[in-house]
Length: 271
Ligand code: GLN
Image 1 (cartoon, rainbow, N blue to C red):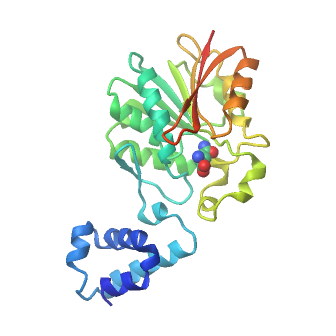
Image 2 (spheres, rainbow, N blue to C red; image 1 turned 30 degrees about the vertical axis):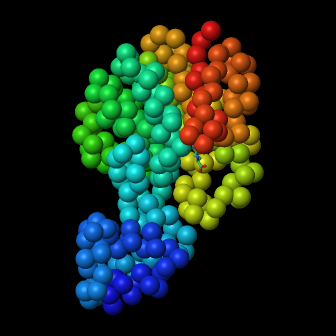
Image 3 (cartoon, rainbow, N blue to C red; image 1 turned 180 degrees about the vertical axis):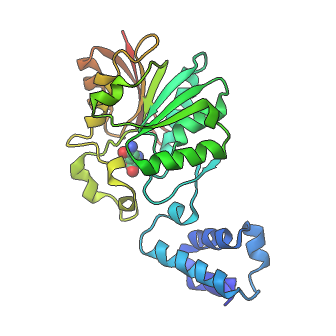
């Protein structure tokens, strides 16, 4: 079998098909085009076919390729961690701004580590605590911290947002940031087949999607070096709910929009 034949059979998924071929052949697009008409070795052919079968069954391309681009870096990902989203780059940009003259942050529900690790890469004066309940997330964050050479500036630990006992072990930070699960439980069944391959615990934010925000705001009291400084990613339709929640805790709330004009990031501060 030749690459040209595989591509012809998968015209409707040309981009994903090419990505899988490049991954298996460990080459780029130019390399792929040069080999279009050479016969593939059996094992490589099998690997490509396996990848295409997984893709067609709804497995996200990023899990097949074991990587996802985020803020100009390829993060390692695998089945069991949330795939970094382009939308989240907005949170990173804002956090970099807020952390300009500061030195410590906690990234709560760190997942693949894409947020915290990007911050450490972009600002070498920072130290971060990356926290997650999922052992898989901690493993993947560890791999990424080493991939980008920031492992000496971060701690990666098991953490349950909902349990006060975990908070009691936590120190103080300049900023606490988080992209927690925030999709209302009732909306989970409406997600696409591909998104549903991702860990539900990274998506399901409880009845109104706000469970994690509430706990983080409540329990983070006393965990700031100076004033309360929280940065959250929020759902496109959660701006109003977040304003109300912040105000119920007596906090100021500023909502920023993403590139698509959707509410995406909330900055919470003391009055
Ligand atoms: N933005 C993600 C999605 O739409 C949700 C991520 C999250 O819940 N933190 O799939």
